[in-house]
Image 1 (cartoon, rainbow, N blue to C red):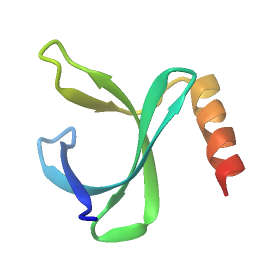
Image 2 (image 1 turned 135 degrees about the horizontal axis):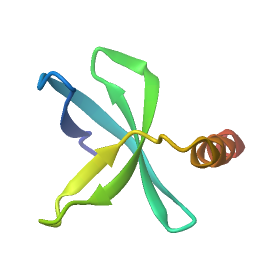
Image 3 (image 1 turned 180 degrees about the vertical axis):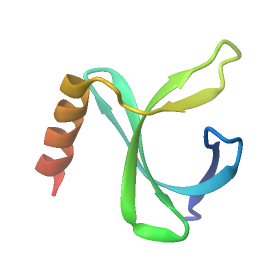
Length: 78
């Protein structure tokens, strides 16, 4: 199976290519596990949502309780 590549913009508008490692759902909320192509061993978890056009949007998890919940679920998968 071919790896899905997702291009995200940073706060300076610079593009970064991420490899979609896995998607998971926790309590009805979708999350994407991504890694930079240059650093495949480091994984970033982003919250997924849809914008007003129905396009996928990836957001940093800012809520501490939500982050802790996601971290607990990920640790239980190991």
